[in-house]
Image (tube, rainbow, N blue to C red; front, top):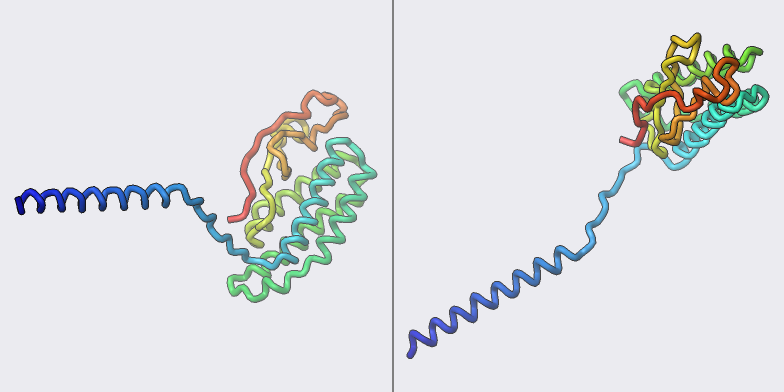
Amino acid sequence: MKKYFFYVLIAVFLFGCYFFFTKKSELTSTEPKQSAIVLKTHSDTFNLTINHLVDAYLSIKDGFVEDDTANIKLKTTEFCTLLESLNLSELEKDSSGVYETVNMTKLDIMSNAKSLLQQKDITEMRRDFSAMTDVMYPTFFNAIKYEGPVLYLQNCPMAFNDTEPANWISNNKEIVNPYMGKHHPKYQSGMLHCGEIKDTIKSK
């Protein structure tokens, strides 16, 4: 009789353990997982300034899509103003030469932007836009450790003379080619969607 009672007691104990741990596991699995905390390298003010600079660049790109030289120059002037006012002081604390790299690329971008403003021919303006893009990515974005919205590096394989490739940056995966545009002298809007995504620019 005592043995029988002992076995019953063990069975009850084991069932209780099983019930306890099973329910605990179910409760744990239904709890929402917490998102990882993203630590920013830069201040919100710095990142906002970069976002405004990118927006100005995207406006220039859109101007090329429309072949609107007046708007291109207007937006390039705005871009230059934002670039000139870009405060790099918080990068000086970095000991890896980031400040010097960003400052040099800033000057290179500015040089190409100002050259664009001097051009009268839209093809030459597009060449300066291409040069601006090549300085911005990868050097500028990598050096500042870009933390803004996702962007896409896109490429046209026949931007100049049907043989020379050129890059541009977009905030949309859809290819809308600023080198061919909507009013190309040879293709009209037929090559507007010619190109491909080469890379994704995002916070690391």
